[in-house]
Length: 146
Image (cartoon, rainbow, N blue to C red; front, top):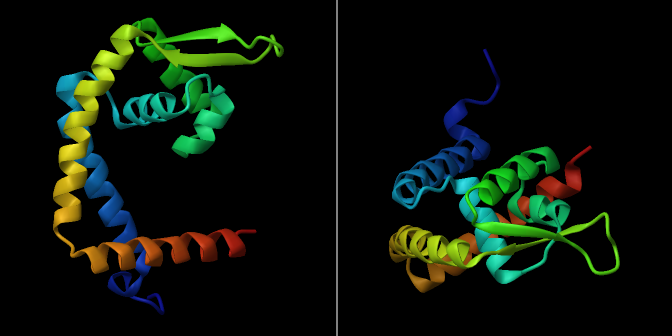
């Protein structure tokens, strides 16, 4: 027997919310032909064209090998192009293609509906409080990580 029941563990509640969000996004992104990881990569590439795979992996919260697989799949579908950096030839810059921008626009509209529905469940003050509380969780967990 443990000294802390699962329903008292904040991590369990955070994980359930994350799983529910990801499952919903997977379902709404499926018609756009994207996984949540692929969508996240395209989202960050939209905001930061030319970002390296390593920086993109950090932004998306996945390992570099996982991001390389995501990028390989996106490149094979013609949604991104990777070209050598002008000065650092061993660094590949990644950018959306025209087809990538089209797919991203569709996928983003789908994901935004989920985000707006989630946000609508809270008042402005509650949303601000939730963001602040989750930020505190991140700060604490990063400070105690071995």
